[in-house]
Amino acid sequence: MEQKEEKVVFERPDALLPVVTNFCPGCTHGIVHRLVAETIDELGIEGKTVGVTPVGCSVMGYNFFGCDMVEAAHGRAPAVATGIKRVNPDNIVFAYQGDGDLASIGTAETVHAATRGENITIIFINNAIYGMTGGQMAPTSLPHQVTQTSPYGRDTASAGYPVRICEMLSTLDGPAYLERVTVDTPANVRKAKKAIKKAFQNQVDGVGYSLIEVVSTCPTNWGMTPQESFTWMRENMLPYYPLGVYRDVLAEGHESVAAAAAERAKDSKIVAEGGAA
Ligand SMILES: Cc1ncc(C[n+]2csc(CCOP(=O)(O)OP(=O)(O)O)c2C)c(N)n1
Ligand code: SF4
Ligand SMILES: [Mg+2]
Image 1 (cartoon, rainbow, N blue to C red):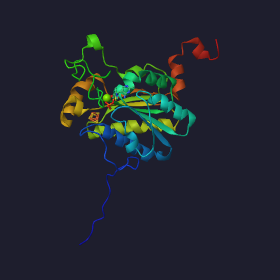
Image 2 (spheres, rainbow, N blue to C red; image 1 turned 120 degrees about the vertical axis):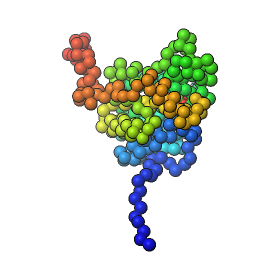
Image 3 (spheres, helix red, strand yellow; image 1 turned 180 degrees about the horizontal axis):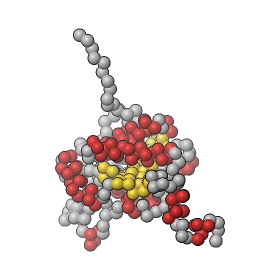
Image 4 (tube, rainbow, N blue to C red; image 1 turned 60 degrees about the vertical axis):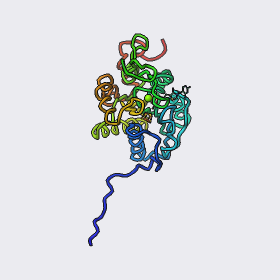
């Protein structure tokens, strides 16, 4: 019988190690890990990439990514990534952080790495909850969202309002590229991949600080099935965290982050003329 030649249409990226992950069924961390690994393969940067993993459900990243990995203390990934990149500018350095990590204990490091315009790549998993520790309220938990520490729903009178990271960082001059994506459908996974690849390509090209926020799910701590989680995310999170590009200096027609910043401040005498005043 004639044997048909088999064509490989889908395989594991080299930068994703052949081990079982610790993520729950339906957790979007796994999808995003794959997109980061595909990007590392496609850009041919595995040998010089260093990932920084946080404290959170992605804490075991060093078991899954096939590149060098460094473990940072809770929230400190952008500071650790800054140090690695400055000491070894030829390395491609990414931090992979949850919302509790990036937008709570690590807010200062996040804001200052962004405003310094560090040439690093940040992957931000916003699942509106502290996943690893059992589902406490995060800075990104929605008003009225039930969590372990807000059993009657997040009360904005006492707990305030959620932090929108892309919008907040878009007020700064430092970032080169900020985009919010999600991974609930094949089309959105493809868009997320494009954004993640661009965020790494920017670093390769020396364009500057790039952050991709992925609106994500945590079926386990939301107490839902994977399918219910995606529905809840679409109905509740996406209206609060609109998808889209919040900064892209090159696409906005600027030569660089510095040129974009100078343009925004062109009416300031010292900025426009340069030199000490
Ligand atoms: C200094 C410090 N404070 C608190 C903790 C406890 N802790 C571990 S993970 C975590 C939050 C993780 O949530 P998130 O960053 O959103 O990641 P997820 O698990 O949801 O992906 C906290 C508070 C810790 N490990 N270290
Ligand atoms: S607890 Fe939540 S964030 Fe952590 S692996 Fe499970 S589903 Fe994912
Ligand atoms: Mg989280």
